[in-house]
Length: 487
Image (cartoon, rainbow, N blue to C red):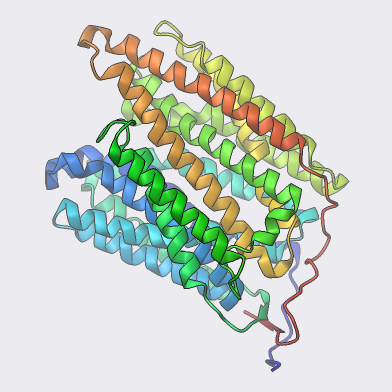
């Protein structure tokens, strides 16, 4: 049945930028909240108590974000990107209100879980909207916007969180999401017009449940093993069994589902698979850098915690610069494979350099070592999404964006959990006088591991097949029951 609709709005470059600005506000919401909570943590514990549960304030958010990311992507494919993105923003706002009003640590954790559900749709929705509005060949013109948002969230999160917590209390760090969320909702409602394919909606609830179990088991395993229980324990074995069984069942079901949550056929395209692997490895490296570089500069080099965001400037500035340069070259030439290759090599070099740090390494040298990490991040993070989206049909844009975002998120979560155990092993038994040395050794070890992981990313980048970037939407194979409407 054909659905009548007004003609799609002509998207001039100016209108595209205006539309993407509203979507970027949503991405900024999730970016800021990743880093605001860290600076508010001490005040939260003083007010609510239950310090032993504090890690769950972060874990609950990360878990629900990871679990719901592919679901949001698929819902966008089925029901329209605009509507689903607005719902995710609304869920994030509700979670923020609940977090600001939470009278106990348990209720704060539940509120953070609601926030994470919304955040799962913010990132994948933003990248899927970009995929709908901007053909891959022209994507480079707009990469700078995303890079600036990432840098703003990474640097601004700790600064904003620290200022709000000191001036108005930790609850204000969540309330700040309300005006930004309302602005996002209004802006998207006003500007976003996406031609979409209306399809019969068949939601793969079983696939979503199996994937949720697998991801949850994996995150619980890496969060608790080595701290709550030993790596070689029956609890570890149980989580491994649950993860493996759920993953096998998920793959089995997705091959048979009428409308799979994650169409496995997209992994038959080598470029998509290699981009997904690169997203996973670079996610580990970038998340580790954002977390442990400020820790090194604070605990080892004596920098103040209030300036933790500014300490990342030597890494964030190259992200913005190289993203824009690579984007312009990609748009002009249509060539792109060289960028993830150079980027993954830069991440490897950065990891090797940072692994040489000791307790006597000066701040200026640490800042210099950050530059290759920034270059590598700028040439891999957005590029992997573009390559993945260019490798699938338009009807699978949300699923592909969700898969890449999920793997990047899982990579970061796994890396932080495993690296946390490594860092703790170097510092937990250290005497106060030796804490600085233990911290330096632990973080150097972590970056040595990231160098090895980045080397795997180099292999994946080199294996990418350079498919010509599309100038327009991919051919859609939605079938005879589809019709194009304006969302």
